Length: 359
Image (tube, rainbow, N blue to C red):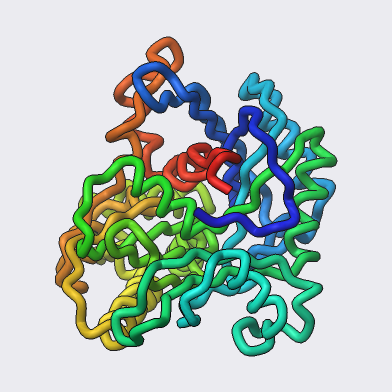
């Protein structure tokens, strides 16, 4: 479990807030007698330019949209778990002497320049997860480090506070997906699975082994780049380009001027980046067998994307089901809605599952 330090939590109820570049999603999960219960899922669009490459450009506009989201959702919970992603967050695996957590934190503080690409650790919020004994280095342990500049973190905290809320945990997108996966999927100690979340402008790639992250990468492109390419190529409005991306791809072709264009062809740059990431992982981790790839995000709904990735990567690919071990309030949701929102809610569900007791 990860949280960027400096945000002091308590034990009161929290709600997950997934802040993307094209929409904001709210997810509330309750601890019920039968386990976890989805009690609220709401989303609102976010205009272009408010968030760019993971950084807040217009904090006032973001606060207004967050406030509006909570209003339409009817959610009274004021304590928020949110996350960062993209190149504003540094995530890396490193090997350390076997230490207790407090000792390790002090070591990183004292020798930050050796582990984190920042000039001054005082400007950085960081956290880590100890993975266990290093297979190739006896007496050493593998650790995943996560860090972000404090001003980036503070900008999100301030925008949320201005909306009348309080950020109590700042997570990372890739690791929020890991939390969702751990809750909903059965896995063995040596199972290697790739979690890919295609957001509007950023695609998160997290390779987990036995439920723990061993490789992460964020790619600065996503569903928006596919829509933009369709819009530019076909000369259609944004809404039509979105429809073509999701719907026409199911037929594998879209008629244009008497010819057939496969909308999946516009996703080629993204497919190549995912493929490069998997190839790099395989080359640096001894060619470990990958059991499956689990796809989430709005663009997971693109027709034919599962089959395309399965063929290109030679990995069984499936759409995420974040409700395998989470029930839902049947007074609010129906099975069709639950199936529909699954891919876009996956990251927010990972955030909503976080409890301050985890820290």
